[in-house]
Length: 416
Image (cartoon, rainbow, N blue to C red):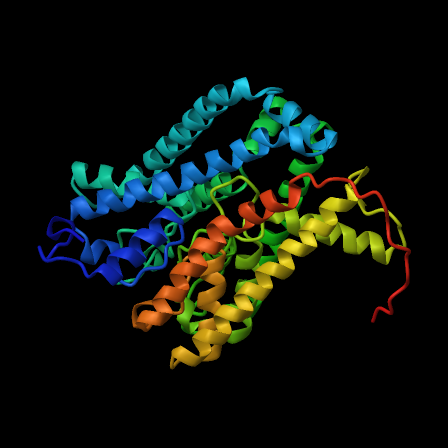
């Protein structure tokens, strides 16, 4: 809110400041003001610090959660944690934090170096360094804030493969989680040696990225306001980029507000799924989606026990995954219902904004600055719930319950 944080030298309204700080800490990227146009260098630094704390802090908390509660969940989960991290007791937490810090610094520094190749040819050295650092931190933490100005996001980089692929790479690395990266390095990339969790994350991430790219190519190639004017290689590049950023970074290389309704609807699905558990990404997590997808496929094939990659799932995990998805959808339903009353805009845009906030994505059709005060409050709540809700709910679900001394008799219920 401080005058020093704005370019005009005036106080930023509490409403705007609270929304922007929430979006930064929740690494969402939705904004009621443009970061570059509104904030001074000091304000941009504040935003960058909030993004870093929000992304790294959540990643650390999520890892702590997996380790600290390893003794409260099944032996299978404890074995996974031990194999993937090499830690079998809480005394290893300091080592984990050190490795995560090093991992974050190295990846963000590499990203900043690649960005600098572009920015150094456009801006003076000092400004090029700052822009490189800001975009690298924002991309790795799956936030989506940028310094392009005019709420244009990365539309100006449609024809810059280095810039878009660097951003996409940072988003993917930040979104698959530190645990997966460690597992890949420990097993030297050998597929058969990877844990079931890692295999689910990598396989589902690959499938969703490919599906998103193909769908956007098909649905938006003829749209004169999005991919239409681009050459075919540029169409593929930007379709791939939007498939990546939808889970869950929020950068845009095309005008999201001009996309077809069916493309927006598909984007909502990608935003709802999100990235991996324990990563900088949001959503219900690709682990959850992979588990439920494999369960459905096993059910179709008539298997009594759901499995994937030669391993059976723990039945209680399937139930918890279903609970997480249904509770998340129920929450979104309530928010969309209220926003459809308070906001005077298209229903598809309201729904898109809500899914984007819940998935901590940051993509928008352009209605964020026009939201009413109540609408902004609802979106702020949705960002908080989307960022903290899944892990909090998971924590509640895995708490050990005392074993009952009795069981009710079974009875069938008609399905379908």
